[in-house]
Image (cartoon, rainbow, N blue to C red; front, side, top):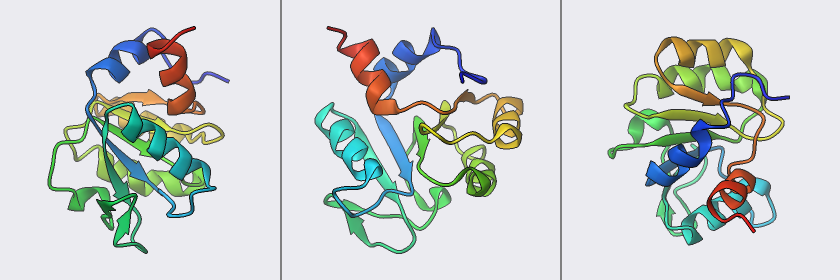
Length: 139
């Protein structure tokens, strides 16, 4: 399912971005969010973990919410249940981010519409690691 996604935008978005907030980043190395975060760090991105239950993940200060991050964010990458995405997107639209990216398996059309109405690129139901590998390092 591709909903809202414009695949032509993804390579430029990933090339231009330098900072990614990862909402729902787990400290457990076996969790997909942690694996993706490690990949993004290795790919040269600065990540900002967002998890109110943690102080630090992967050596980075952890923030309780998006609005607590003091720096500019290019992409807000969400690892939360679809029904929990609305309030996260409400925070994200207050930021000067370019994109709200809901990981594979996460689809919330109402949140996506709110993001679009606030001029944010919306990617849903896609893995940022998989797309980075496919579009930035093909073959």
